[in-house]
Length: 113
Image (tube, rainbow, N blue to C red; front, side, top):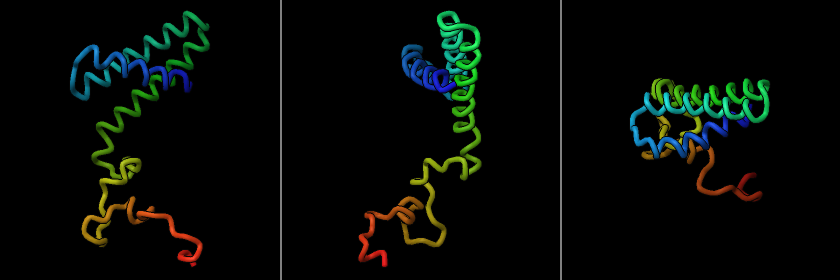
């Protein structure tokens, strides 16, 4: 399954610039086609059971991209990887969640208490 996920991610990275289509929905549609192509070629080379696993991994990559594109702007908890962009409500001006939790430096043993 990981092979389909990363195979789709890498193959789409090569195909999308060649196609030259911009926009969210066409990008996701092309990724879906690439996921099908990766699973088809993998199935031809490695067998039908591998084909299903590659297709599931590719579908996971397509679903993750669609959720990141269309759902995460409305659900901030889904954008946890992008913590830099969420500001603390009562914090100092410009203090982000990342700087609050991680700080600029790691405290030494003497400072930690």
